[in-house]
Image 1: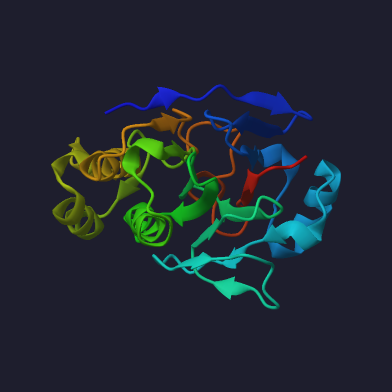
Image 2 (image 1 turned 90 degrees about the horizontal axis):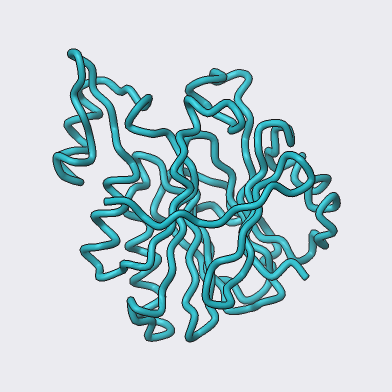
Length: 237
């Protein structure tokens, strides 16, 4: 399954920027040339965009399916992999470097969020959809999801054990075997999951972070030198 292409513009040379259709919030993704945006470097990047750090919330990511609903900035950094809010004054963020940032927006209730979804965390978007339904009564027709760039099936080689764990959970289309090697397809797994939930308004960047050098990539750059990209969603003003 292939999602719709999201119209994306290049901002300030090294930042992708777009707006979620349906009068939604803006989304941002820093590119490799923006530099490594780990926790200690994010403040400088936010200042560059004119965003007050008091508006910004992030998680200490742990490759989980743990999501927090936030109405204001907590006094400490939360440990998990997803954030949801109805407070339009907040900016939510996640880092990624082959894992998939997934942005989402409920157009009726004006609720938005972001999750960090790697191979271990695949399925976190279903957790987010469940929270939206339980707390706000979100219906699938009002929900728009944007799958950010991530490691693609063209390049995301894994060992046989990981391949079998992933495909046993997410189906045969979530992986490929080519020339005796094993590859994961994060996008296919997420598409199938979203469609099974009745969510069809799905957009996609249609790019692989490993083979496209404008992105930061743990696999391509290596564990000591990889560039953490910062994904943001909110009404930047």
